[in-house]
Image 1 (cartoon, rainbow, N blue to C red):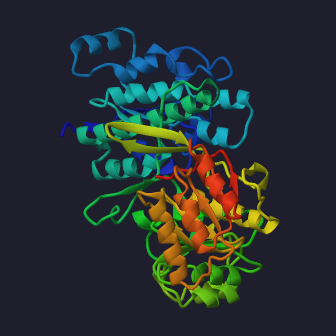
Image 2: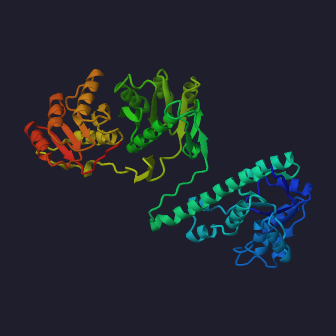
Image 3: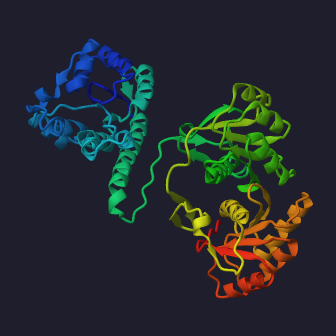
Length: 508
């Protein structure tokens, strides 16, 4: 497999963690090492001899370190083809030594951006020499081994130990692929930084962190999560998260963010809330959320925006649920909840980041802004003769928040602090309303004085007619139908109030 003994190496790295075993192996095999600056000093401290790059090129590091390795004797040493006589002859003519191994990493651009550093500092972290060395060595993988990240030090060490200081063509191709992944990821983050202001219509996504999931939505579908869940959550208990868990968790944390400043609890199944409530305590909020649908709560995803104490844990402990998400847990509450080993307990550390949504569709990708708009009382335009009371306005705000996070077509019925029922994912808004009414009644809720929220306008007055018959007194909807007045007129005639927001919240 074209095994090739490493006889010379160029090493120039930003991160020197765990490099010592590599240096020891290269020293053991008598490899000539070329290096620069701080890396040279580090290697010499390991007792290995180093040829300074400046000695090879005849040039010092210049422009504050911006130009160190950009020289024909370095790139010629990497790029010349050992099986091409003309290349070998030219390398000899110009005194260009062959370089068999390149170990180089890149300035921490992504980390510098994340730290909030100044633009001047960020620009200085755009690597030039490093990225060029990586591409050159990866291109000539037939002859050169490239290590482009400290994450690969261990793999190189294993191969050098097992193969007496040599690498195979298969090894070199593998490391080249890893190197191009590193370089493409790096360039993606640089482009996205600049494109924050330039807004070039291009979609660049790169994520190094990948987690294999047991399967996708169904057992016959393979699945991965790309990202770092540990940034958002500490998993305190339970089995590995599944694809469906993650989809529901995403929906749960997005919904609960709507209730900042309140003690809220939500229970979700298949991304839709089957129970939502606010109350003075987490225990009470859970009880009210559970009351909304004691059947669907089984096997659900639970989420709250407040600390889970023992009283709340005792209340929910008898329920079989898949996931509980909270910003903190009292020690005794956590001990109780951990009693079921498969129960997933997530401590949420940050809110949902990002402002964009992306998904594959047909033969391409669609992207949109996240729906980050939420309407409050000040956004309500009263369109009926009767205005809603303050209590009704509070209820309309509550219902609208839940409605925004429910699959269309949807209708939500509630008071100011408890979801009564919702009709979700229906092909007809009338069907959604009837489903919600029937469900609310089946769980013992009276709809007299309840409010109704709709994710989109009413094309006909049938929904307000049905709502009136059920006892609903106030309605919030975006408006925008050419027949809005028909619904308004019905409300005026029957003593109902209606507000419009001008904002539709479809969720497909």
